[in-house]
Image 1: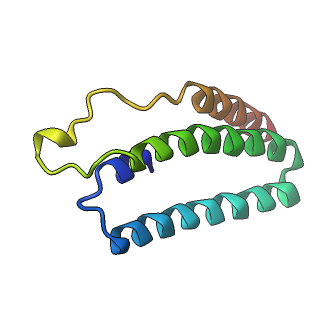
Image 2: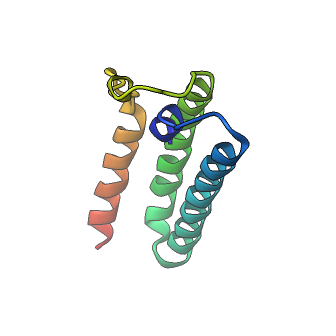
Length: 104
């Protein structure tokens, strides 16, 4: 979502609503999967919860910074140049996938 926010076409209430609706939808889907794992695969539920918490922490900080930037108005501006760091969430995802493989 930080990329979507940073690349928003304009700064209007409609765009803000659209992007916050997308965030809410993502959070709802993650909560659904977390609850499902707690029922179906309890050994995976903990690592998945860690992944979600880690990804949210990274994304929350990045989204906050993205909202502070002006909308991009040129084609060349779409290339942000430097990716948002996801080292912690990538590590948490790798751990979660490993536990999922063991569970299968």
